[in-house]
Image 1 (cartoon, rainbow, N blue to C red):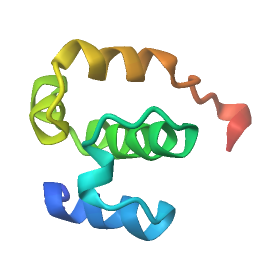
Image 2: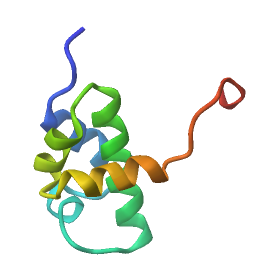
Image 3: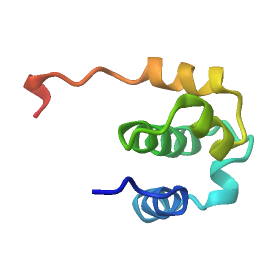
Image 4: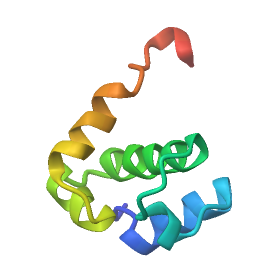
Length: 80
């Protein structure tokens, strides 16, 4: 199965959070925006996009994407 496109991921996050693309790539640091960005990063990473590619999508440096990924809790078998 083909991985989701950038637009498909943005749409998924919008439907789940109500945060549109422009707000998602903006500079706001409100918790709701950060959660939406992390959701986008999580989905894109799980789809196989590199941190550099995700950074370009989000108009951020790849190190910012790495930081978000490191802040995400690890999922274990117990979480399922």
